[in-house]
Amino acid sequence: MKILFTVFTFLVAVQAQQNSWLKEPDGFKGLKFGSTEEEFRKTFGVYPKRSEYGTVSDNCGNNPHDTVEWQMAHPPGATPPRLRNRFCFYRIEVGKFALITHFAFNDDQFRRVSGTFSPEYFTDVKEIFLDTYGPPSSTEQEVVQTKTGAQYTQERLIWIGKKVRLYVEKFGSTIDQGLFGLAQIEDLDKTSQA
Image (cartoon, rainbow, N blue to C red):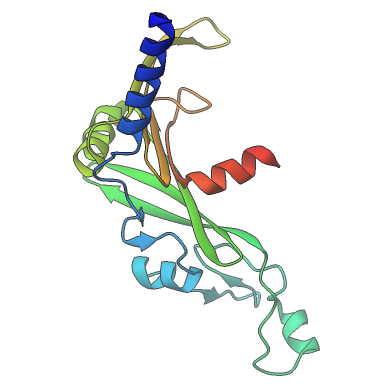
């Protein structure tokens, strides 16, 4: 009975720690969750450009419906339909390195962001995230091995709050890129149920 009580107390303490993330964000780099692609463009100063081929290109990718053919087949000023799930890309320069970010939009609402960076700058990225978001809920280290047998120490920091989950990893799916992600927990729950 005493062991059960101790485990229960530990779980309650972990849950309390997760829910007391003092610097839990409501977005990323000034873009709040729920913002539109247009708000993304205003926040980061990127706007669509028409190419010489008539297609519109911007940091949110090409709209496959916005072509010369589509424009000719519809009345002037008609707006082509948007894709339901879209990504907007943005390069954030941080001193001597960059974060390549991917902002995910669902029904024109900002839902989550992920990004990559060179693992040689993991210590710098880690320091920035610790300064910005405070101490993580957990830190993990493990040895990972490549297909060629080389071993590296993977480090992962995880923050879990009431509404948001954030992680930073020294290595993503390869040893050539570090990885981070920030998402609303409700979206992660929906994704795992699908």
